[in-house]
Structures are given as structure tokens and as C-alpha cells.
Length: 155
Image (cartoon, rainbow, N blue to C red; front, side, top):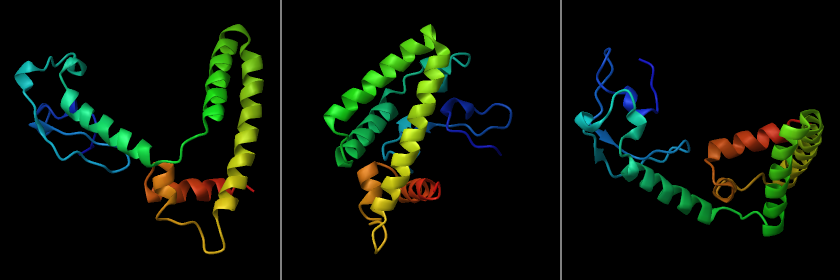
């Protein structure tokens, strides 16, 4: 059977299993330890997104906050610049979409070059430190290895 991360799919209809509890989850593999009872009588089947999922969502927010606290911060001046670029590009899409495309292409070339250079600078003589790289990036080891390999193979 196809699996989904959408909890409301598991309502027991059309042969699907019936979910009785919800818990927070993240693409990184984290699963919340607290399981919250699911009352299908209180769920509007046509608008399940209106159901109260604050418990699992709160657990996920806590998880993300903890992950972000362990990651390498983006320097404040760069974060500000990135926000400004996003704001300007968004405005440009409405006013001059072709100019926005040119700017996006320039950004893509820039980020690809910097990503490749960065991947090679992280790859020391002994190889990347796989006990610190994933945590610094806030992703799983598998995702970190995949990202660095992807960037390194662009040359």
C-alpha cells in the first residue's frame, strides 16, 4: 500500500488503516515520542486540515528549534542581504519577469560556484568530519553526504 505523511489519509476508508494517534515527525527521521489521541468524530472529513494538530505540531516546532540551535548560524549581515535579495526579486517578478530570470540565473551560477568551492574546502585530507558536518547543517548524515557529493561533482 502507498504510504503518506498526511495523517488524514488513514481514516479507515477504502481499505486504508485507521489512525488512532498522531505524533510529530520530520523528514530528517525524527519522530516525536508523545502520541496524541485522534478523535475521528471531531474531524470534518471534507476539511481535515481544520482538525486540532497543535500537539504534534508543537513537538515538531520544539524539534526544529533544537536543531537550529545546534547549526552553524548564517552571519547576520548575509542573512539580511539574502532577505533583501528575496524581497527585490519578488517585486521584480511582478514588474519585470525577464529581468528577474536573468538575476536568478546569475544567482544560480554564483551559488553553484561557491557550493563547489565550499564542498572541496570541507573535504580535508582525512575527509569531512561526519560527526560534525550534519549537525552544523541541521540535516541527517545521509543528506549531508548527498549534498557535499552533489556540490563536489559539479566541477
